[in-house]
Image (cartoon, rainbow, N blue to C red):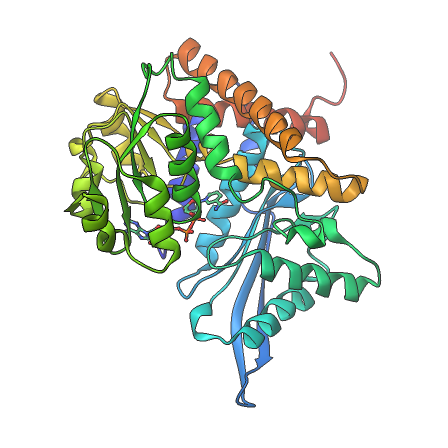
Length: 421
Ligand SMILES: NC(=O)c1ccc[n+]([C@@H]2O[C@H](COP(=O)([O-])OP(=O)(O)OC[C@H]3O[C@@H](n4cnc5c(N)ncnc54)[C@H](O)[C@@H]3O)[C@@H](O)[C@H]2O)c1
């Protein structure tokens, strides 16, 4: 993501939602800009004895509703615009789910695949050394994102605890279970999205067994396939960055995941699964009930939106549908369940992790699933009702829902009239 206008494009959603609400201008003035973005250079020792520096950022977009929350990405194309846009999305995602958080995000411009494990550990620890006064259990709580994982979160939590001189697991979520991570975090994003579709199935015209196509077969895509198949749905097509496969009567998801785990690409598995290799664009156009973008942003554009045959699009990825494509999909009657709601299961279970760390008492998996189900259904229903009552898309409804909460909090912080007249 390198587009300089990325945040401007994201702000279109804010303006759209604001046009449906009576919002104090002060609220919009606060939400139009990130509160603070800190840039640092991380200088680490490489294995060969040389030193190398990497650009790093942490953005706290808005903290009106609580400490800021959002992942840290390690990616060679990361930019400040991307970090700030992702932090904006987190602000709205936390508000949609009514989590007591604002939005944040961080990144290091690095290709982690070029680093050894010890270099990666030094870089992760350097990030926390640089941002130790910005992050904190009551201030800003990072989590994994693209190319970061539980191991990296464990190093970061350890570094923070060493700097502060006390064990502070609640500073970061997505940690290994042994270091205070929560059960149920691995599949939380997919599970939350799955609970949402299942809950609204009647309203979405998805009765009985459903067929699903999944773009991107990584963490979110694989867990979604597993949950859908276990419930009797057909996964008819999947893709990764190297290609796509299709099978009208449903792919064997367990074999597919086993093949991917062994390092194969989905296209390599076509023969074994009796599937047909198709192009990346053809995946978007397959006959199915639910299309699940679970890869990257900006994948559904005006160039391919007209070919989509699904009834419903569930955005497990962040920002997979461009605003222009959204308009085309709406005209064609295709319902988009928007990212800030559809993939919010991940941050919701991260919130559970933080709560468990703070209370020092840990829940079992059934409790995690029950709490996630309740929250996805409650907020999904609220967004659906706004969409139906106001005649707006689910995306606009989700932003209205979030903006209502944000504006109430911002006004409560001091924009309400000083004296009642
Ligand atoms: N994992 C989470 O908890 C979580 C939470 C919220 C949002 N998301 C979002 O979901 C998306 C996927 O995240 P993930 O954790 O599953 O990442 P991942 O890296 O595990 O998987 C991404 C998958 O997308 C594939 N891919 C890349 N380019 C592609 C292309 N052009 N066409 C088809 N497939 C392509 C990759 O091969 C890989 O299989 C991202 O947008 C991420 O921000 C993830």
